[in-house]
Length: 404
Image (tube, rainbow, N blue to C red; front, side, top):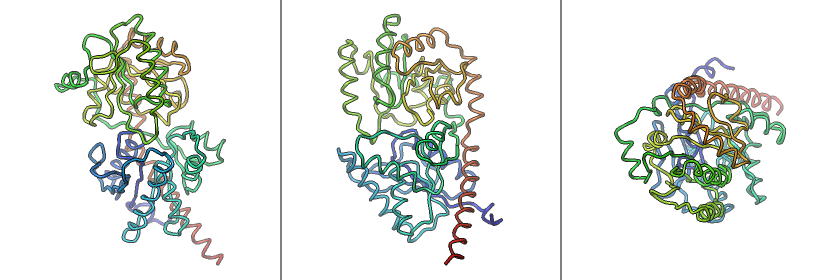
């Protein structure tokens, strides 16, 4: 690698699929901040409807890609957003040169693949957080193209690194997530009580918290079944489910959840047995963790699961699925394991978490994981991989020139 290339700051464009609080978006923003703090010139790009902004302040440059209201048809939604990204980036590249463009989702991946095919960029980087299974063939094609066309592919867990290699023949480098230092704490704050009142959370009774909304991937129906079993011994327990701002269609799953709650005589609403908060302001999230007695993440499919790190840093015990990627970085002392396919197992893990909460053990887990998962270290790893990819790309370009 040329010495100047190996040391100079990079101009980086980071693409993400939304301005809303989803795991991949959080990863993109925190990576952007860490790269920015390391001296690189970073622009974060995302589609946004009129009046939308990122769910939290962004310290580096941003570019919002104008899109209309979200169509009900998923194929139309994805297609129009790919087109919007392609058009916006084509205009941007006429005036601005990036060292690299790095996307964290298939929408950005397909837009960058379009630009690559048109000769407007030499290649791009893609992080695969996780993959979905879509019934629609076009969505599956877009998902595959979004990483197959990339010059470099990254993953946030060994699980997805392995799956990409064995199922798709794609070699991916592992990059880590991080934890925003100082944001999460078990220390109660004066504003915590106001959030409890605003959400209709009861005091003096156990609170089970889940983040990510009501989604099949989050296994929310089985969590509800486990909650019903838990209430046999803890009849006043509340289930609080936060988030849910997703581009995917979870309407039918939400109706199934509501029907099961009604059949179980569990009212949904402030003060009820179940509280669905929807997306909350970003400043509420640290207090949200502190109001919980246990955080449940019995997911069926995760890229990593940042919630686990945030909950432990907030002093809250966690219940997680005994599957990868959780098993890659969590030890038995860090969590209460559950079989995500058995509601009784989830209920037993919740019961154990409530019965044996140990602040000292949680603090030890939080300290270890906080040292392991750092956004500064993640940014350093990204820059190393970026420079390797740029060097290989430059070498390939020289080789192509000599062959002409």
